[in-house]
Image 1: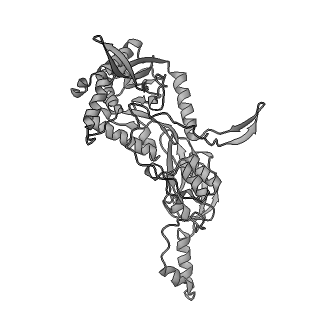
Image 2: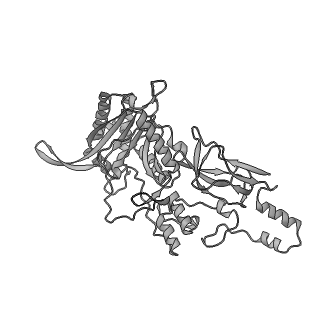
Image 3: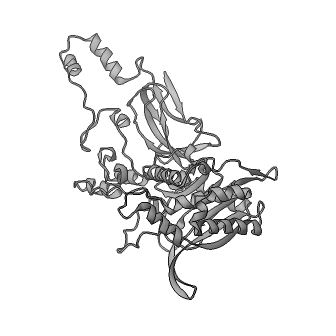
Length: 443
């Protein structure tokens, strides 16, 4: 009898998901709890295991398709044993006269198949180790006929990159491994500009023509749909106001380098760790910005905990992993959490729960480029802080010309919950603490 495998409930408020990868095919043996599909929803990818065993008799969805919770994904035919291996064992017991059966039992099955050109037994591709790679890289591998899970990636943490796939398709060796860098999701100064023009990205979609020339129609991914809904809701329901300021972080930057030491043996603390520590204090003393606005009841909900979200550009799109109880962490503790976030995002190992429960968000667009911005509030929060690119400027002080380091910041806030005067005091508090590191030491 065939069992229907349906998309399970993946969490509160989730009604649909996009099939990123189907990890079995018709006729494959399925074991209980075997991962058979990867579904992307609410900015996170979730691996879906099978609740029962059997043989995949019919697959009703395709990669890239959006399905609703409860929709049938595939049908699994029960085989009185749970797997083709069990069925094979039973048939060998029924026919002991066959000499080939003992030989199969004496020879252990290979643990993995390394060649991408070797034909795999049914079900093997669904059970072996899955390589870390972005969905676009996986699609490119399928188009080029490359078995991506057999590759050793040259990216951080062994991540398979586009150049690895292209090299494998050309019959060459993987790209040289990139040296693992310390996690720095929020550097104080941006990396140097590229010296050569990068190749244009591969745009996935359906080619076509409009009145003026060639076009490509590309359907929105589940992540982009989520971002679009969230941003539209934020802009349409929240009256945004953005205030800007700049901070002289010369002393703070010098203190960071002193902590590191001349020999580099001290702790490496990012500027963002100090920003977060400052925000934890300021959100406690300005609680209206550590709150959410209830549209229906027309009330402000003041959060008695501080969970700060960090907006990060990931291979799956914009995600906001959350540091919970950030106010209970030291600068070093916050720096450690930022490193963990960087690793999770880099390896695309974050889950849905990592993105929930935030009370305030920080976005560091200056790490890529840009001085000031007007960040959009992460609904239902009431404020978001944007950090711009730091710049050295000449400054006259006591009739002496000095070089100082300045960091621009932008605060977008919900004008229903707070007014300009409250925002100005909040910003003044942030500026005071980051421009004078001594204040951070006594908090």
